[in-house]
Length: 400
Image (cartoon, rainbow, N blue to C red; front, top):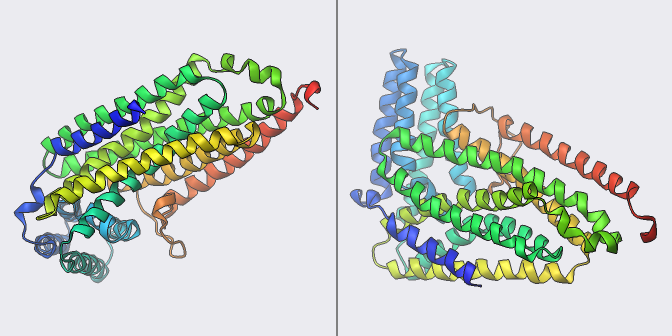
């Protein structure tokens, strides 16, 4: 239990250390939108001169310098929805793509006006909410639970697997990987906080995207490794007794690295969410910390439930279920990772009108995220089927 306490304390410390008053320079979200509108209008004037590159840079200024830097995006995610934030973010991307393709002036103007409309609607909704103790508490609670849930699932599944297979000593590297990730999240938050301008915001998106794509590879490997053990461990007491020998140094590193990446990806973003929340909270700062504390406790409860349930399940269903969970997490991370790179201007956006946004599953309405996810899902299914067939071929005859 002390390891979970250390994690919770680190979360509190890293948030309190990097709190920023950036939002406090503005009286309301509508005032921020007023400033963004001026920059967006200037980008259109620049586009009319034929200088599309400078026009795109000015759109980036509105995004990175205001929407990202001042916590607008994260406040929308906390108080409205993740899908709404994704819709606004993709509108920025659509505008830049239109400018790159030298779209007609009226099309670019319509896209810019729609963006301002979205921003104004969100500002009106956020400004229209009177600050209340309950509202601040729920906002804080939602942030820590939502951001920590994916990390807890990954870490919890890996630790439960090790405990279930009799490798309790091997859980230490996994725990230390998670703690190290939180510590590095603090360092990263200081770096991002110290940087100013568009480059820092773009660099943040690229870093988050790259981290998630690395996590996709690691999770895919770990889940495939787990499913390769499922049949033999479920059917052969001999293999079950010798299972510790299957935790090689390479496999152990992969498990610890998967935990590290999951926590690191969520840790830095959690800091920025709370940074925005603290900056806009006037009267109920104590509710922010109460929500954070209770949220951290809920994550610990979720973690404990994963461990308790794991001990009650038979070996084969548990190992297969854990493997499937990590496969699905890899698909989710892939969508979110590509989305971050799109926001960092490294990958384009080709919209798909008949697909909706499902933020929690990393599903977004564009080809650049959907096609890789479909391919990964297909590879996952094929790998899963092939591995199970291979396991059955090598099933010990004594277990039949």
